Length: 193
Image (tube, rainbow, N blue to C red):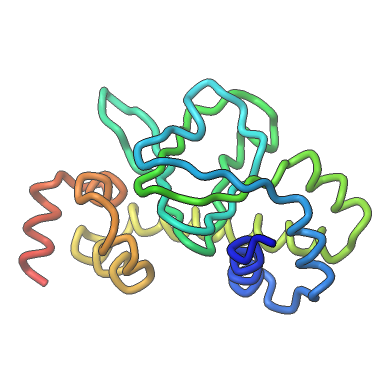
């Protein structure tokens, strides 16, 4: 028995769909494939097609892309989070995003095709999937609004309040790129807090 798998499903369900039943969680668990990944390992490369949702059981991942010769961090995921390259997965087209393990991690892959089959059979799993998509879209909108309307200090403070694990565990260069700052600007912001 994989206790971490059960823990991960419970954490994801609590965050995304708290009313999910015990049986619904069991159905979800049955679809998950465990994978242990080493720090620095690339889980998805630019040009590949994203075929899975990833539930993080242990560790931290980052989703990023290259722009003008630099890595730009798009998203961090850690215990209890779901990571997906939405456009690539839905369209089944190559992605420009990449996924890297920032720590030794245990992840659970949820095949998009198997999930879609289960969504046809289970109203509850369909609702869970919808909640995951809604959460992803809201997160993207909040991030885009922060980039548009908040200054560097406000963006850092938001990340500090909403995701302290990222501040504690992610490399400063990745945090800076996520916040659309140079590492020097991030150092000044942190020093001023």
